[in-house]
Image (cartoon, rainbow, N blue to C red; front, side):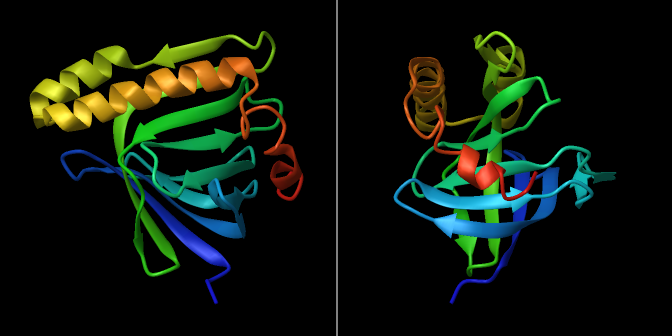
Length: 168
């Protein structure tokens, strides 16, 4: 039986801390594992203590190069996808992800889909020496997500709402 709580650990490619927080396991389906993070959750962001001011749901896909954060208002991003290496699970209660800088975001007010942090991706690619296959996977994942966030592909249309309702 999987643990109800999961520690989510994001690092950068060089191993430096990025994000670290506990989340409640909501369910697992064919898309991946859905995790809920309520308001007030203590976390670490870029090595510094933080507290989540707005709840969210995180989808950790089974074998994809991304994670998706689904947000309620007043957050301006309805969906925020981090391009990452595929999840590496350490037992059922800890998931490790390497953040590869690129983000794909859908804005709540306009539905505009944006690709963010291409400059950071290029800088870290050179500094950390991203292998060519990692670059190709990251860029392909960003392209797929850019289309999926704009065309109504699930889980980005409405499927996430039932899980988000559990943490709002």
